[in-house]
Amino acid sequence: MEELIAKRYVKALQEVLSLEELESAQEYFNAVASLFKEWKVREFFASPEVDKDAKVSLLLAPIEGNEKIANFIKVLAQKNRLDIIPAIASELATNIALAKKEFTGHVYSEYELSVDELARIADALQKRVGGSVQLVQESEKYDGIKVEVDTVGLEVDFSKSKIKKQLIENILKAI
Image 1 (cartoon, rainbow, N blue to C red):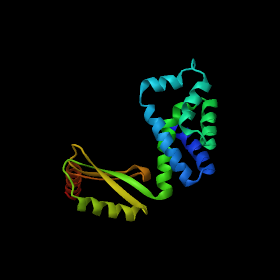
Image 2: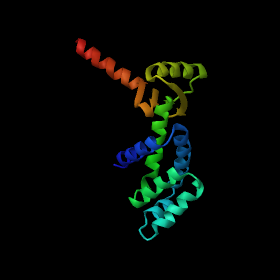
Image 3: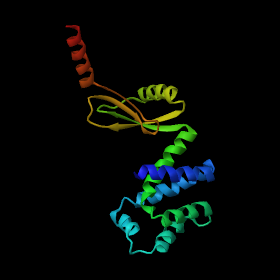
Image 4: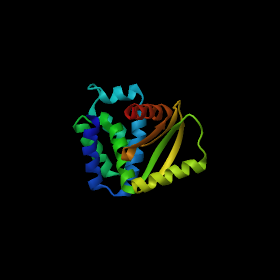
C-alpha cells in the first residue's frame, strides 16, 4: 500500500523538479530513510503526541533554501504521510535509474566470478534493458547463478537443481 501512495508523490515530484533536482532530492530522502531504520525515529514521527510543526522543522533543517522539497515535506506532514518517506526514497531511486538508464544488478553465487565473467553478463544485460548495468556480486549459498536487476524487474537464474528437475521431466515425457 505504501508503495502505491509513494508512487503518486514521486510522480508529483517528477513534474516539478528537473533531473538534477531529483538527484539532490534523492540524496536527502535516502538520508532521511536511513534514519527511519531506527525504531525510535519511526516512533517519533508516528506519534500523535508530537506536534506536526516540530516534525516538519526537524526534517526541514538540512534543506534550508530548497522551497520545493520544503513544501513537499509540509504536504506530507499535513496528510500524515511522513512515515512513507522510506518508500518515497526507494521509488525515487527507481525512477531516476529508469530516466538515466543506469541500473544496478546483483549476482548471487556460491563461488566468486571473475571480472571478465561479470563484464560479459553485464554486456548481455545491457543489450536486454537498453541501458548501462553495473553488477555487484553477493556471496550466497546458491547451487548456481542468479542475476537480479530489480529496477527493471529482471531475474535470471541457473541452478543445478532446476536443470536436474527439467531433465527428469523431459525424460518422463519421452517415455
